[in-house]
Image 1 (cartoon, rainbow, N blue to C red):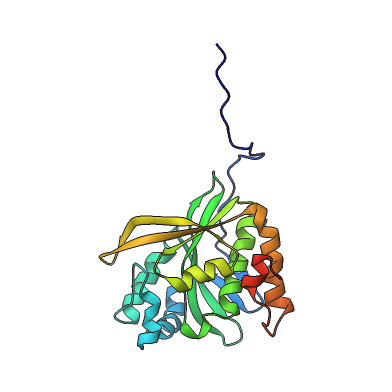
Image 2: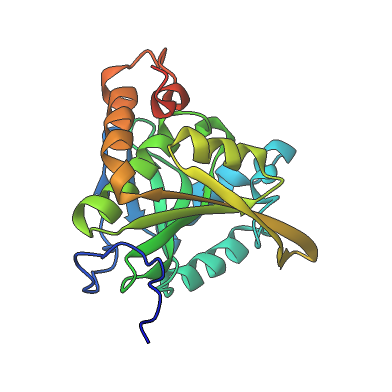
Length: 230
């Protein structure tokens, strides 16, 4: 007796595992992402993220921080340099020659060609500037253009409105809320999930390049560009 056919997913043309993000400098026009160097990075990173209530809000939704002093942060940075997943990078602002934050590739599943961008934080002065846009642009170029990943994820606390807005602005699509997903600093975290697919990247990449490099007055909204309303 013939079994009824059931719906199945599309054939994936290449199923071979791909490589991992490189531990190299990723150079942009405004910033550079460099593998973490605890001794050289700690002074700037501590200063830009400690010392005031506004600065220390950076750590509200993180599972770590703030730190008691530079020694504590340096020990933490030294641990991060040993980590294969996440792979951490320091964000260097080229004009000011200051280290202004950190980013990472994480949850890297090369055989399924997916990874996540996370552990992202910047000094208050660098937020809502070209720093985050170019950092994410460089990371997406590595994931989609060089490594040929199929999917890049962005996850954050569902209460973190700034991160959720950034995900949408950068072209990620909202997928839903994982309720009671994890416990962070003794508190419940419902996690908001976002993703970007390789089929979406070409249009998003073009919009990022327009916003970063062809519209220096920033009168264009990247949110509007990525929504297709421009």
